[in-house]
Length: 159
View 1 (tube, rainbow, N blue to C red):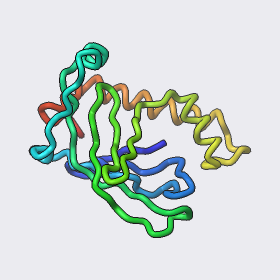
View 2: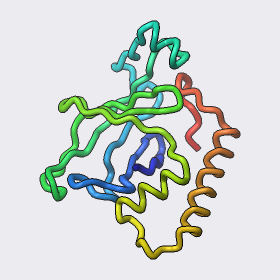
View 3: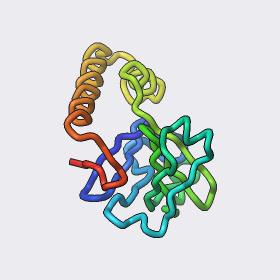
View 4: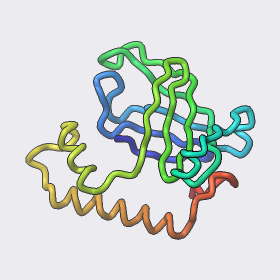
C-alpha cells in the first residue's frame, strides 16, 4: 500500500505497509508529471480488445525513478522507471528489472486489513477510530475528484 502525494509536478509514492526490501515510510517511486515530461515516451498503443475494455486507444506514460534495495533496506538505489496511466488505475514499472505493479484505490475495509497485516498499527488500537479516519480520507478524495475530473491528456488537476 502506498500514499501518493504531490510536490509541484512530481508524484511521490511513500510506502504505507512496506516490505522486506523497502520499509514503510520510504519513497518507493517518483514520477515527473510536468507538462512535456513525457515527450520522449510514446504512449502505449492498446490492442483492439484492450481498447474495448479500457475505453481508450493509448496509455500515457511519465518518466520516473523507482527505489530498490536488498533485504533489510541494504544498498538502496534509484533506477529508471515509468508511471503508466490505465483508466482509473496506474502502474509503475521499474524498467531495468522488468518489474511492474498496478495500483487502485482500496476500500476502507481493505485498507484496514492491509494495515493490520503489516503491523503498521497495534492490534489493540482503536479499530473504530481507524475505520472512521479511513472513511473521512476516502470521502475527501471523492469530493476532490468530483470538483476536478482528471484529464491526463491535458495535464490533469493536481491541487
